[in-house]
Amino acid sequence: MSKYDMQQDFLNQLAMELGVEAYRPDYHGKKGDKNTVLFYTKEAAAHNRRVDANTFTRAYSQSEARDALKYHGVRIPDDQVYKDHFWSFENSDINGMLDLNFANFGRLDLRGPNWQDVLRGAVTFALTKRKQWQYLVAAGGPLALSESDDTYNDFNRQLIQAMKLRNGHVYMGDVNYYGDQRLAVLDGESIYKEYDGGEIYNFACAYCVPVKDEKLEQLVRLWNKSGEVALIDVIMDRVENVGGINLIWR
Image (cartoon, rainbow, N blue to C red; front, side, top):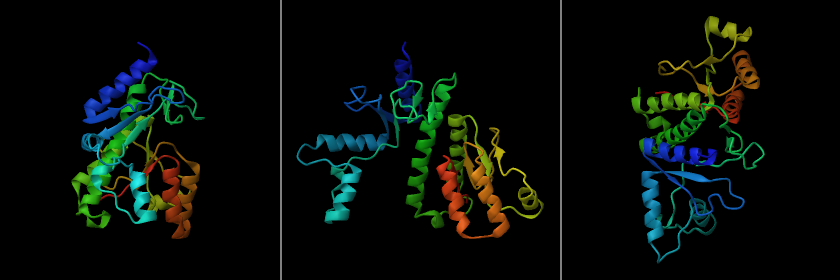
């Protein structure tokens, strides 16, 4: 079996495991395409089939519907708007060139024996992010979450575990340090603690990142030394820039 076939078969298997749908658009594998596969929740896929079945009206993408409302004040009915996929796959390297050894502009390295873990972690992470966002919206936002919200906190745990699966390593860190621990961090002690696969307690970290980023470490030290409020947003942006996630615990 070719590498292409193995990857595509495994993506189908993942979709079945996670209870989602893997969709290959009609341009999949054609000239200029890099084996695109789009992943949808079951609900989104069913909705899109209903949109396709309605041949009497035009169908719109989410972005087209947003533009119609923003620029023309026209609200497109929901039954005419496709739901977005929650994750997409393509065989592309860091330069965007077709390469079966990589995926998604080189962010996923598929060369090693753990390539299936890499893909499983990537899809699980994206699906968990989508579920957490939907849960947060339904709750009314972060401030509406109840104290010790186990469902929301479990999403955080699943995200950290999926990052480890996807990247091989994940490092947990905090923004605020106190007492002797603060003095140690200011004196050069690392802010990072590698997740070892064990139990993750509530408030275990303020963020997690796939690499030990030196600039992020410098920013955290500067914050704990100066208390300059503007640094908080800079720290959170840096976490996301290096492929990490900022976490809210309840």
